[in-house]
Length: 198
Image (cartoon, rainbow, N blue to C red):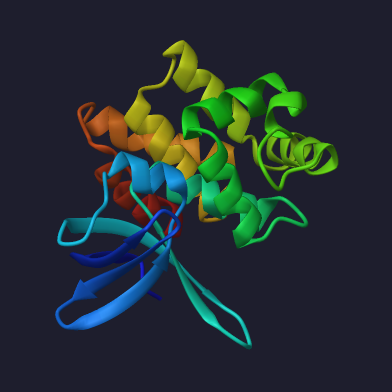
């Protein structure tokens, strides 16, 4: 599995990059949000979080400028029935991650359905399944109100994206925060994973 790419951009298009990593050119599909945020052009050094989708007919690499974007992508394709990588990329291209979270928390189907490629039924399914199945909206709400830190919320969401229940993810993250309240997101995820697997 390819989880991260660090290299030089040798071709840049709004929805696709070719990244040279030690002489090997990786073609990576990206959302517009990543393209805009990283201000991508040829010759720029880039560090992408990635997800490799393996199908019978193709191996497709998706790249993201942040863990948060990749986590939302993974939640959409893993937790919402009928959503594949193309629609998940359309969601990330259609609105910022923070706005998407707000729409899901508020149940704003109308705004979600304005995204190109997302109809009303798909928008309703996204809201319903992310609210009911995962408990993601609780974490997003807590982060918005400040009852959990941004790094703790990001760590919880990363663990949820990996398939852990929100309750278990929150307990594991809190345990790490008790020992070191200034832990960054990556340290929280690593520590929580050790705790959940042990």
